[in-house]
Length: 277
Image 1 (tube, one colour):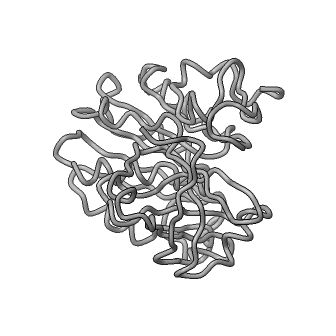
Image 2 (cartoon, rainbow, N blue to C red):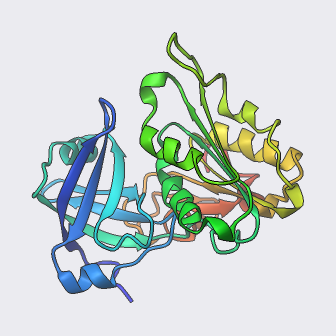
């Protein structure tokens, strides 16, 4: 059992600039024994510590079987993420984790799986998608729906191309505002749900992104016939500790850092998008 209070040193093995303000870092723990023992569930997150600055909660985007390195995709939005963006390969940070409740990938075996994401919301579900893809024969149809505001926001292009080549897999990309060279859909990603060919009685939906988008996606999936307990949302709040002590991420009676970040829609449908919760 890992110590949730203890940081472990990790080295940046590779850094990828995805867009102007989004980057990916691949980490490896400097302690070989801990690196070997470390494991996580798709949908969980780590607390990344920048020495002298502080911590920030970032989703893990790797497949759990990738033991050599662990990846985080980060958007520069504040002091911590700006500091992390300046680090180079070979530099080191502190890591606590993993934390939280992840995606129900094991419960989804044998079923059709629908992923609906918006913006950088694709990052928290990448580990889940990779998990399904690496075990493709254990699942039914796979639907991956990704929405962005504009074409320049699209990251993971190579992954979408690879996922599209998988059997019984459909990848739908949509931009709120397309452009001259945009060859995919234009409009909100949630509008793609209506035309999906899925068996609602044998399907699980997983969504991450802005709360209004997730709420609309969850309602659209429910309208398709999915049970509310088979629709999962990954929530975001200002998580400071990862263990439910500081209270910053309280969500009704739950704490997103330890009771989530992944919740069945049935548990939070009366809380999502409501001020004060």
